Image (cartoon, rainbow over all chains, first blue to last red; front, side, top):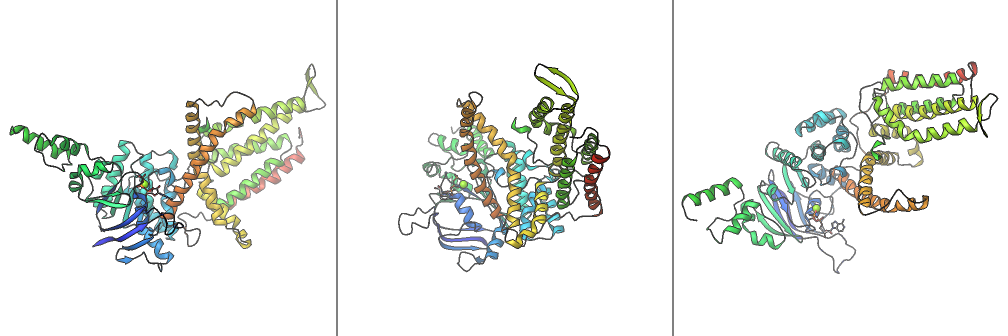
Length: 288
Length: 273
Ligand SMILES: Nc1ncnc2c1ncn2[C@@H]1O[C@H](COP(=O)(O)OP(=O)(O)OP(=O)(O)O)[C@@H](O)[C@H]1O
Ligand SMILES: [Mg+2]
């Protein structure tokens, strides 16, 4: 069952310039996202990824189009404030800069911020905070100050803060962009755990192609429109198309693409192991 | 250098002070400050100094932190000490060098005032900020200011603003350090010239700092919206420290500091200022 159903969604930031040259940041996007899936969103800077993410949890209201979340239409004007807040609870968001999303100074107080806003009972908040911190492996830091943590640890606290609201979907908006390779790997494995074991729908916005290949599905956005949509294999087969909108492909795919005029190689190889196997096979059979 | 500022920081712990209800703790701090200001005689100062040391020990805040928090005060301490030593007139001349006359009263004044400044700043930050997380602090403030809602003041928002301001002190300090280095790398000079020149040299620090604060604020506001923040309405708290017997006893202890200081002033009046 589709969790998100977008039908011809458009959005522009300045509504004042009605009728005239309003730049549509999101321009007629239609798509469905399955419950429990792991979707990656790619696109160059300013293509509208963050804007789309904010539409999905109703921080921004689409200018036109129909948005259905969990089987319920939420884009109409009659939606109440309580319903909007319920959507925001169900669809959590983790941002790029860890410093700008931690609201308080102590780890556990920050994780409690969401459930506190929801008016959850104090004892239950306590349980949720403890289990959320456990899930992201930060239990031992519960009483630490947030500003003494590393970037990766701060992001894990931010994830715990979202988990404590018991969401059905989490959107990661370039949440790995400011991290070192270790922090990046940490967050990626946390994301995969949440998707596989907790069955949380994950939408991961990134510029990193090696992260993108781990998703079930990749959506490429260009100038507010859907440009490519498919599995990692399908999307990365279109090397030309991706390069045209200023996007990279994983290194293996790139290598295979560059070699393909000389060797008859399959396109859309995204896995290093797989690529090595194909090349080894060619060399053994002497076709090269 | 800016990293030395420990003001507004919190040191988690399990002491009596950590567990105290924040509203009562704010009142206790005010009582403590009043007591320090009421001290006049050497005996009263010795008393309040001992009490302050006791409070530090009870709080469990490491001595290293206390010493570090004193460092930024050194200038003020030296200045007031020198001022008092040389410019207080008294009866007992200790020595004179040319036109400089040092009286015994001056020396005593200097010592007592230095003790007063030290107690005031170290004591109040140990009682309050070091042992209370900013959230607790603003919770306490929110409770104490509740009556103001009657005259239309939005106390919750005010308290939330306070706690976010405290939360961003370390972030902005770090950022200031970064901007200073970046401007130095571009050849900015913050150390030479007269006062006006130096003040003008601060502009290239303040402007980017201001811009980045706004960026932080916009991002934080979005993040808070995403986490369902909508003001104080219907909000609960994970930890509410209800005042218990121990808290009231601690408060009583702080309240008793005031009569104790007054009595010592009256009955042991030696070397009063
Ligand atoms: N608050 C805003 N007000 C006006 N215009 C905005 C605002 N936020 C973004 N835009 C514009 O909308 C467009 C899309 O921005 P968006 O942040 O969605 O891009 P993005 O794909 O997330 O880019 P990035 O990779 O840099 O994060 C950009 O042209 C940007 O200038
Ligand atoms: Mg973005």
